[in-house]
Image (cartoon, rainbow, N blue to C red; front, side, top):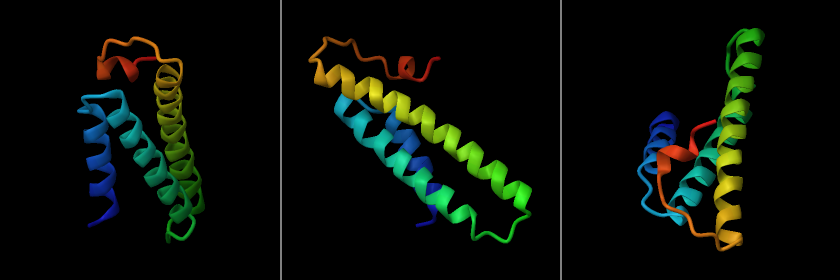
Length: 92
């Protein structure tokens, strides 16, 4: 299985999550997969500028998913009532 297809699968499953717990799991997986990609960018035979930009882009995505994960885990920790609308989590 290649990396991109696994990351894509994680993204699709996060968007299709039916529970907060499922969303927490898949957003955590996305963050882990982005960490692997950020780490591996340094070994690519790409121009340095492309490596830096790619790592920055992946770090930004990782930060966004981290914010979503933080929001979800906070809801669970506070035992808040939450009406599940997965698409709302991605809004800024």
